Amino acid sequence: MREITIGGAQLGAIQKTDSRASVVQRMLVLLEQARQQGCELVVFPELALTTFFPRWFMPDQAEVDTWFEAEMPSEATRPLFDFSREHGIAISFGYAELTPEGQHFNTSIITDRQGNIVGKYRKVHLPGHVEFDTARDFQHLEKRYFLPGDLGFPTWESQGAVMGMCICNDRRWPETYRVMGLQGVELITLGYNTPSINSQKRGEGEEHRLFHSELCMQAGAYQNATWVVGVAKAGVEDGFPLMGGSVIVDPNGFVVARAQGQGDELIVHACDMDLCNFGKTTIFDFARHRRIEHYGIITRQTGVQRP
Ligand code: ING
Image (tube, rainbow, N blue to C red; front, side, top):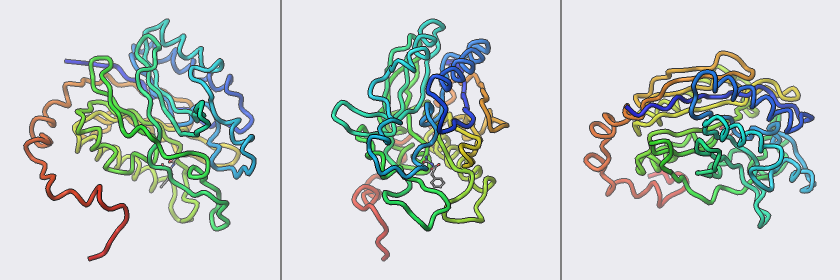
């Protein structure tokens, strides 16, 4: 049995005026709860340090850059890495990354239990749009503020397991899970900031979105025999609602832990990485069952070409 006790640390709303220091304090409270419950890894949401700023149209790049971190650990986030090292708890969280070359990514990192960064991922699937869209009830400007990730979907060995990360919209694309599945991934951690309502489809409410969010993560887990931990930033940010629904999904696709509220909330589960073995050696033994001679269109073609 290769058990890792994992915490999903859902964050409630972060207002535009909330400081990074105030958010880090909330994250430390969740980390202390996680320590008391024996967690060895704690997963935080996408863009965990700030409000979901891609909802705001900002023509001034200097203002946009105020939402980004030029170094990690940064002064504001160092207490998180200190806690990780002092208490032997690995952490993962998302943030807006500004590279020394001046590139902007929607990024997440994961550490080992000594607070050392062992993995970095940059969001590949960016939803939304580039220019102000008057047809939308609110903006979703990730394609304006971020470059598509340039690291692919890497995996790494840590805490005795093969781990990988993705971010938010990535969870809706089966390719995300399969690329990591082909690397033997046993644990995928992801954070998300998902608006509770569809800015382009008034009737689509939170129930609908929660269903799709879980559907994607359950399918990805089952079809690749991997654990999936999906953690929300939830609550109402400056009047804009984000949905909760943080979950831990086992390698058979079953939800084994689910957040109930819209605020700061920790969910915990002892995840046995050996539960991945049966699926990987039977129904999803890729080497025995996949027929890649028929899959070429998936990488040859981006959009739909009707027959
Ligand atoms: N947010 C949303 C997400 O993929 C979205 C955007 C919501 C796209 C619902 C499509 C449908 O969960 C981010 N940040 O990607």
